[in-house]
Length: 443
Picture 1 (cartoon, rainbow, N blue to C red):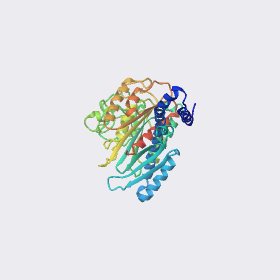
Picture 2 (cartoon, rainbow, N blue to C red):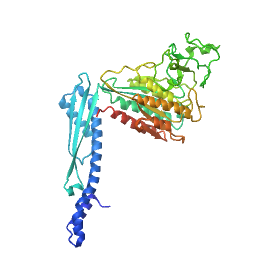
Picture 3 (cartoon, rainbow, N blue to C red):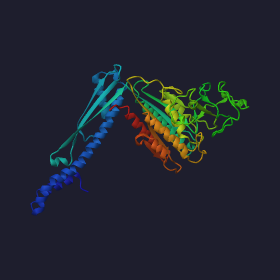
Picture 4 (cartoon, rainbow, N blue to C red):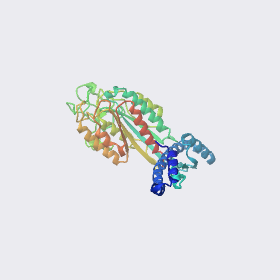
């Protein structure tokens, strides 16, 4: 295969040929031919260099924003240049310039605006009179006026004990916490919640005396009650079951809940005395996962919560997804911190599961896929996305299951990731982390 220099040498040789009509025709045609070929080759090289420069500017802008408030304008420019130089490795680009302008936080947020430009020498287009192509990119990072809240709904079902999936998930989730926390300039810029789920979610026992707790499907037999109802009446004011057994006292509740009464299993309505369907349905599953953790910037505690996860039980992705949504809302039951006026917020949910839905409060047997559970989840996903929450979904398919249609359709903007190995969990979380980090870049 001829090299670029070889093509140019050949073109020059033909240009000076005088034998016959071939030389004349070629002389007429060679310039536009080389121009077309050169445009494709050279513009491809420029686009690669421009993409790399954009990524380097975005990262440098985020890095400089973390300590910009303590630097002078000249120091910011010098440090931004240093970050960029360490990140951008394209020696073929000439006349590279980078500028950084810092605007102090005066109540509406601080920002760094970085601009970069360079010149790419052409390989073939110079024959047509274009020896170089100039290009430029820009990046703006804001803080104090842009914040991010991320809820991680993580599969804790029994199948996660297989093929090294749980350790891989724990490592990937902790790495994501580190990655997102690194973009926080001030406390509260990034908040993360952890929602382990199986067929139930463990919300803890602090809600047991609330009047909107539903004990009508609660028992002490250690099994998942698929529509089970206490054989006698119960007194909601006394907040305990009256089923002929002291073991049913709510003080023995392990903190697990199942899906709320339809249609509130798919909405964000806060629990209240009325309507009764908004009540939280207590459960006493023997497969109660690790207790969830609401939004927090305590990175050490968040990672400890991930380490405490243990696989057990059947799959109900919808209940994990709904509680992830609850964790982002400034209302009961989890009461996320109120959002500040004039601040832009990005709300996102990461839903990771290694299986298909098999069981919820009404449908499924805990072993076989249930389209009825999927249908409830589809309604929930539609409502979450309509509320402006971005959803990322991950299917870890080590068992040869079909592609999860519900996880794929639930994802926002094609943000569905599928892997057939435990090691692929890290790649999926890395890609999501990169996407979320870019959302911290304003432009």
